[in-house]
Image (cartoon, rainbow, N blue to C red; front, side, top):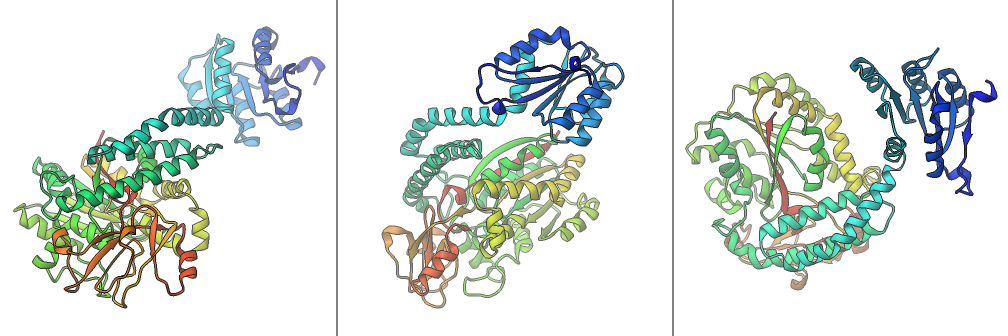
Length: 532
């Protein structure tokens, strides 16, 4: 390579040259780009130039570059050929291509080779600068903007926490907090810690509000009640079926609002999305909340009307084995004639079987599908040190959810449904919250084992630390015994027994649990997906 083949431009404004982004610019007319190079110099970039593709390939062997700019039309080795060879050696280095051509096939080839950006000549220096900022500095800029936005929103969110006085207020507040949490995830600031404190405060106020209002909502779910578990089918599923729509009702166990928003982008190209939030009943546990959805009844009503389908707390029988019969009772009670199917997917093999038999599902008006992965992930995180490490934070928990959805049979199921034109009602029975504050409770041997709620006849606890229900029938809940009471943990609390207390606390602190009162558990997504 001749000395003229390259030119390195160093910034005079930086003393530590190694901190400057290193740019390689290959163009056979590089001498005409002096103004562009000087402009980048003034912005703190070190630019190494090359006159053709061969020189560019030699240079990348000699030193690392943060970004490469290629002219598409160079003599000898073309820009596309150079791009292909660069990607073989440096697959993760962003490459910006500049060309005079607007031919679609060239664009397609460049995009197919994972080009980072594509600019049409003539380009001005600011266009180059924007591309560099987007590709090299976006994480920092996004982080800084997210931090500024949250600082500006902090007082507004604090005001909303103090003034929230309706379920609509709480839906709005929780949605804003989830949005800010996801925006701040991964930022290198202490803003996420401040937001966590604000969420804790919000959950404290939410628990107080639920305690003041829950009794008048249930058991009859009157006009003052928010949309709750037993009303999902009558209010959101049956109206679609009555219009002649084929409907897939997909319930993802333990699916929070932030997890939904993590997977939402993967569905946006296939569906028009209508997002709602509904309120799960207490306890926010499968036995109660999911059975309430499928039956359209409060748990007490299920136990009285269909005692053979209700499983008491003291029973060792699985608590969610009668979901299909419960759906049938609800359809019959509303005098509907819908033909339906029910499938529960616990592993990939079951998912693959469902996909193989998918065509048969189209013979039904309604297809109910339960996906259990996230619930199994939550329990595995408690029991497995490895899984706990993989999902150490809410952000990591969301990331595992996204990875599962992207690589499981679930995404293929949604694609197949989209191709049929059927609608999807996507929801969950309850969410989950990471707990870290133990509360001592004493119960007899028949007391249930859930960490977020307890039901029993001889419970001992501090009533100021829990939400207690001493008359379960007035809340639509069955009583295993005449003197049974329910207590619910709030916020990030969890129940621990005095026996072997320290071990118990250490084992369950920072695990994801459900059954109690929090925005994460009770305010859960209800999504209607219409194929595009």
